[in-house]
Every structure is written in structure tokens, then in C-alpha cells.
Image (cartoon, rainbow, N blue to C red; front, side):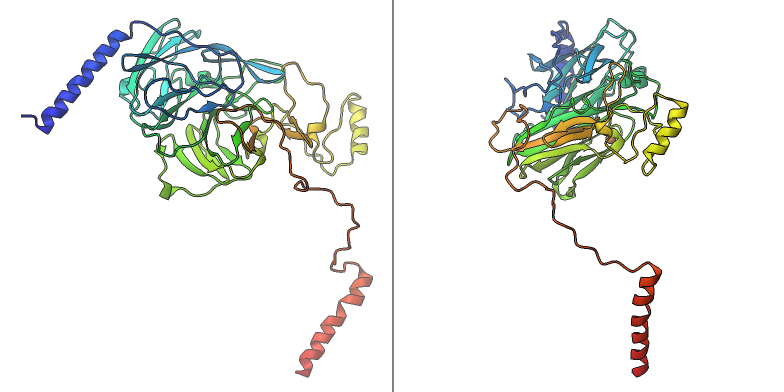
Length: 459
Ligand SMILES: [Cu+2]
């Protein structure tokens, strides 16, 4: 008799057979793909299994896999890498497969995945699969769930992707050092049912922060709060890819945060709703419209919207010191201070010194000699002049008629005639103001008061 209990029992037995078979199959390690380029690579369409609309990773790529029986096999190599943050600055980081962050791992709900992790770092490591619901022995916390992976060794993780959504991976082994060195990546699990919340363009990136002193190459890994490079996929503006979108597309942007602070991520020109976190899909009844969503530390937010407003739209972290590159934080606020007097006083003490910022801005215009391998604090330029940004800033470019998989930078937006804010030259009429000198006060003030009194007396 096939009772429910018997049926479940045999299903469990089958699962453990599969696991044993899996272990035998793990004997051969697939080739580890690497990537040299720092620009967004084209989406990787599936060639087997259920169809899905693949993601693109800002300044990144998707890790190729191979099928081995019914297992999807990936190979991550933890290793030292060189990462260009933007033209003019390269950092010496740790990452995976030639890049920091590591490649995006893309799978489908229900996939059985086998991920080989080879450690080419000078110290031990592990990989934790943040948000993926899996057996404890696969969770990757060194010492707690598994032995640390020694340098030169390869470990295998095997689990089933039981839930679709957006997740991350990072070491759980000398974690502060290894994450401060840039070891992290994103994981996207597509729903098995392609009709579940489909989008036309699906962008993904992870946020990381570094303290790299001007003129140096290596992050200071013991820093806890005072970071100076605020990066999306270990890139800073103007090194971050734009997000090209076809007018009318349904768009999803998935953002992970492995910095040590929160980031209010803001998109201009549209409202959106958070559709997914690292905990799963947000029911439509629980969504509300936003233009900024705060992404806490160790969290993911994916938001969806319809790109119905053509143009070039700023897309950035709303903490203004996160849209800057390495800077001196000890600059005094000199707004309103006379430059001439100050220059005289400073000149006596330090003849080569330069006085800056007395009008409150134009830091983007400043020309100061920078140390090697150091980016200007505020930089980038648009069709109307300097953009004066850095760090976590890029542009979403919404255009008519882009081809489906076309993610090339479409260039600056061609504004329709008469739609750009403009300067007026007409004389300004004097604004009515309350009198404030003695003469005018005498003439203007008492009369209405007297009139009021008279009026009251007359009543
Ligand atoms: Cu921020």
C-alpha cells in the first residue's frame, strides 16, 4: 500500500541517492571562466532548461556554467585581482574569477547547483550564500558549518535553489578583511514560471566601500566607518556603466549592499515599487510607490517600474558624500569668507597654499594636482557642463526603439526643442517688501493702525 508516509519516505531516499551520486560526479572540476573587461557584458541567455530573461550586471558579467547530469555546475576562484574603479585609478583587491566583485551566478528556481570554490588567496576562505535557503552544511560559515578552505584547496557546495529571488555570496571567513578587499557577488534565481512578474530589462549590481588613501592601491581593511570610495560593482562615477533602457520597457534593478552603512538609492523621473528583497518577493498588495529606497547593510532591494519618461535620468545614492570620490574630510566651510583677506593671511604662513570654496561650490571646477592613482573628488561631464559627482552615481538613459539586448551607451539625450530649463534676461520687477528703515516705517506704519482704531471706535 502506498501511504503518504511511504511516499514521502521513498522521496527522501531518492534525494539522498541523488546526493551520493552528486558527490561521485564532483570528481571533475569544470574550467573556471575569467573576465578581464570592466564593462557590462551582454546577457547570457539559457541554452538548456527553462527559459528566462537573463540579467545584466553593471560593469560585470554572468558566470558560465556546465550541465553535469541534472546538476548545474559553476566554478568560483577566490584570488587577488586588479580592479579599475574609473579611468585613472586601479585598486588591488581580492575577488573571484579575475574580478571584484565576482560574477553574477544566475539560476532557475528548482535548479540543483554544484559550486566549486578554489582558494587562490594567501589565507583561508569560505563562501556563504546570503539569503539562499539551504542545508546548514552548505551555509559556508567557516568553523560553524564547514572547515575553512585552506589556500590551494577546492571545496564543493551542493544545494537546490528552492526559491526564486535575488541573493548574494561572500566569504564567512576572516570576513572583515575579505569583504573590505572586495570579495562578494550577486545571485539571481529566476522563477520557473516565466510569466511571474516578467520584465524587459533586469539590471543587477552590488555596493561595496573601501578606504584607499590617495596615491595608494590597497584598501585599509581595519577601517570601520570612514570609507572614501563608495562603489557600485567596485566602480565609481564616471566609471559606472549607464543603464540603457528602451522607452516603455518594464525594468527591474536589483541592488545588494555589502558596505558598512545604508544607502538611500534614488531614481529621477519615475516612481517605482520594491518588488523583491533577499527574503523573497514582496506581495503586490504590500508595495507602495517610492522614488528613493533605503538599502540597509547586508540587504537587497529590487525595484520595478515602467520606463515611460524618455531622457537622461540621474540614478544615485542620496547621501551626498557617497557621490564623491576620495577627499580630504578636514576642509573647512569657507562660504561667505572674503577670499582676498584669507589669501593674504594664509599667504604669510604658507606661500604656496590655495584658498578654495569661498563661494560654496565649484569643487568640480577646481584644478589641483592629484597624487598618482587618485580620482578627482567630484568629476564627470554632461552635455551642459561638469556633473560634479563621483562614487555611487550613474545615469539611466531611456530612449525610443532600443533593440532588445542592446545595452550600448546611447550617448547624451537629444532634448526636444524648448524642453530644457533656460536663462531669462528680462529685468526683474521689485518684490514688495515690508519697510525696514525708520523713515519708511514712520510713513507706512501708523496710518493703517489709526484707521483700524478709528474704524473700531465708529462701530
Ligand atoms: Cu550611499
